[in-house]
Length: 190
Length: 190
Image 1 (cartoon, each protein chain N blue to C red):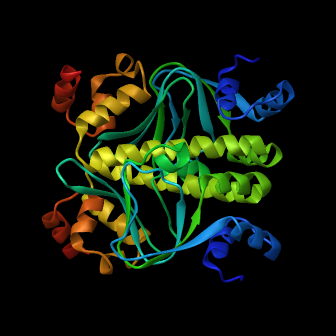
Image 2: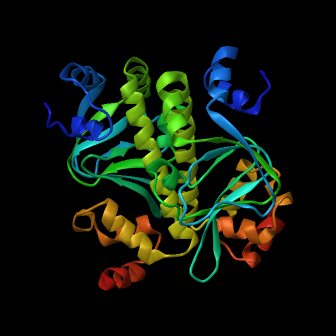
Image 3: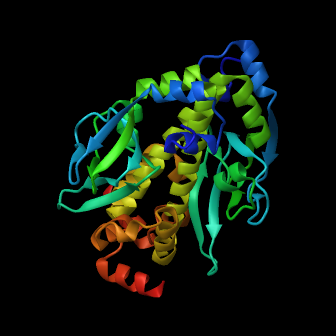
């Protein structure tokens, strides 16, 4: 049980006993999805935050022109959902889609709050993960502000190792907010 | 004491007794800065997260061409710092500057952790605030991805009411990542 990916991630921040980790696991539900499956539709409630055990998902916004803007990828050991809809119990403005057959552990907001209340170590874990996510988004915004597509591309390589081998180039371009031509130039520079 | 701005903000999320709020306050230090004062220099350690009581600050990155990219403003009731340097105890890559005479309550990371440990309600408060900050940054990124400067401008008006009357237009343009000309067009559309 020591080698469970969720336990490994939690124990990078706080240590758990076997009993505590069993208690944590009881708050999750295992789910399996197929490649291309839309797990959360725009307009639906986001009932779960997903911890990815195996596979690959994306969260994106489809604009009125049919263009898909990718906000985040979620591969092994990532958390992924429409954060606003999940935390505010509002209708989703984003879509969560599987890019591969995917296996996740799904956590409801109710269970996240219960875990945080009953095991303060888990609240500390969620606080640290959210803080790190916040810092990563600030870096991405700084890259947009300085129009530094090259830095954006290298950030992507760092935070998602192996991703570019797993998804079409058009999706990488969508995540970076650049054209296919710019992406092609960036990847040649590496 | 009920009307203290920090208490008001905390009590939007969790309720505190007078004793608890007194305990919270003991972890902060009051500071006053002058207009134009640089409170955190690029390369220094970010010892404090600032809760703004009165005044206005910005956190920005000065690039090699001397261009200042504004990541965030902090006016009354905002928290502002170089989040990465503060939380990771690393050297700052950003600058925090006062745009007006400013009065803050300053919190060290040690005291933030101590408060979180000794008063789990405060940990819950920090978790909720960080989550909301994370969601706000995701929205800003989506605006960049869809190149929607108009939505970006309206986001700014919503989250910083009164800001455009308090800072030069060049700073608004820097925050939005647009030229002065584009900003001028956007503000005429309002």
